[in-house]
Image (cartoon, rainbow, N blue to C red; front, side, top):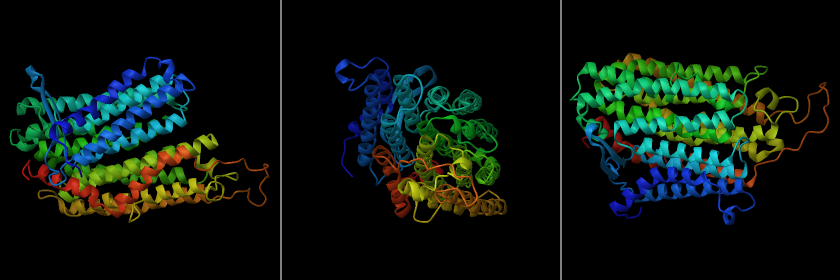
Length: 532
């Protein structure tokens, strides 16, 4: 780690939040002739890579300058009065909970910009695409950096419009319906969440998240806490998404362009679970304790439901879309995150935060890979991919097949890879929940979640068998359709975009202390009411 002055750290965090907006504004005018390269479209896509690359470098430097001996302390803080009448402040800061999500967001957005430079999505002006991508990045980064409830809400909402247009303008079939479903679900959830945030702020006399966490609910009556948790929780549950508020997600993922799916799964879903940890757990602990069993019950139903939906899509003849299957898998994986949070224990919450990051890495990689398959075949239909002229990726494109198999076994939680630790710790937390929660109920939830891991392994292994190990020629007796079309293996730009995700998945799996060393002290302090 390196020694960086507090003022430089403060500047770095502000730069990380604001620079994408400045980059978005700069992307809209036509590029000067000297910067266009072979075309204006190439120039604006290169601009997207440059801006997101600069933000990633700043995020890495921020992480290197972060005091890892005190991860529970808010660092790189800025606290400026913004709306004095409401005591709303521009309050930024990072601790061991938010830092990994900041770096993950910066990384995934850069990889998406890099991928789009070589493989631009089919649709309208690349200038609008790059600008929307950068606005989306700014809103997501701000969500993880702000420490004021109203600023959190603004950042939380800021990502909706760019994602709506990315789906509606650059998406595939049924993109308009999917985009409308996405925006309506999330906006309705956010309206309810705003009421809960206002209830907390007005009753506590402050919107400052650090002060509210330190107060640990002592300034709020139990009835206020219960009402606030219900309202805020609904908004966060839609974004997570929690069953049964998940139905917008499969449609959005199926219709979204590849980079839209990567960012939606990799970072946007994390905004909901981050809100549970940063706001609901420390600010309204009594209200959270009331709803924790219900949250855990919905979480395990989501685990089973998501897995069964994936199994239905994976079976032969179902006509399942591979992007839709991975979207349903996210419902199950985020169920483990919610189960860890519902346990209200340091072990469970640490597992939830670890699973958040692992899901972002692994599912981001999966959507990149499925996007590559769709580009090569013109479809993500699983029956087509695994049919008589199916992928048989091990034989036809071995590197692509190997990466798909790697991502699948990482997603099912193979020990030694990132997907294992978060789900295991979440179930450990649920096995011995916080005082005041029913242990028999949580033991039941843990048993159901364990069964969900078996279903997860089943559908992912079926996908690998069908797509990677299919026949390279029609079966005996089947009609010969001529020579197999050529199938390109992993290209250089794809390798550049995917290698960091593979490396980090292995690193987090083999050395989980990299993340847990950051999150654990911060979680301990958060659950103890701001006391280290």
